[in-house]
Length: 405
Image (tube, one colour):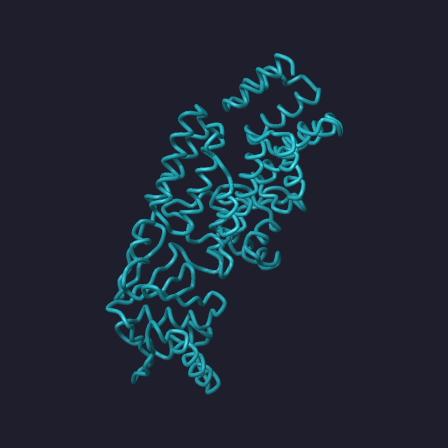
């Protein structure tokens, strides 16, 4: 590597893409193309970055295994940034194996962290946590240490564990300061601000108030019956009933919990569980059946009793608390994903949400009509953009497949 390319590489490592381009903007050799691609990615020109990185990979040729693997890793990061979740991840896994064979531990760690971030975006937290536990960040460069700790912070945050999240954030901040990279320090500061934002709403005895994440954790650890609308579950001390796959039962439970210590009228239960305002005999029979199923599910947590006007929840604890997301509605999960301010494709949103593209298209159409999202481009290159949602954290809105934590 010649001295000019070395200077450009050092500038990129320090987070200064403009200074790097000053050295290599007019060069078309393989190392310069790769560095130009990385510089364009840092400047947000993702389409140009991808094209340059592919040109660089072809220019290096099949014998330059390490260089080609680095180009693939950089292209994968560009794909991640542009939310191309269908990008062939097997190429990234192959690049990681190449780094391991060649003893390039730093780039291997970079590729591994990128894979974990991909899993997080898809809501696969158990896999992401297991993969992170296998990584050794102790001897890693400060930049990679900070990236790894930010991943650990996000995993702890989405699990609702405040103390590990704060510890990971402190380690990320120290590593970012050591690296001297301004954008990385700014990323850590943005992550820190999420801890002070409302992450959920507490509904109890007809009153409602916002909660930050540390307060959410205290509520979940309390001795009260918690109806968790963020994870669609009910908890009392060590007992938990998961109803993520049984939406009707959870709708009935939440209606009863929000009405506690009073009763939920039959009209409310019909509307919340079945979506009808005028019930017939079939609906009444179905309500009896579903409430019977709910009683069996809650047998260790509470009982459901009939009252003159409807039904009431009788907890085996002193209080019933409902933990609700900061915003709700059929499109809340879409907004939560798009709250990062990145441009998303319909296919990427469908993949992250575990839904069909048609369902996502309907949600985006409704959000566009209400002015909450806008489009960029046309045809297959069409992307959807949403301004970052202020005022609350989207941690508890992000998708989590049922049964995963």
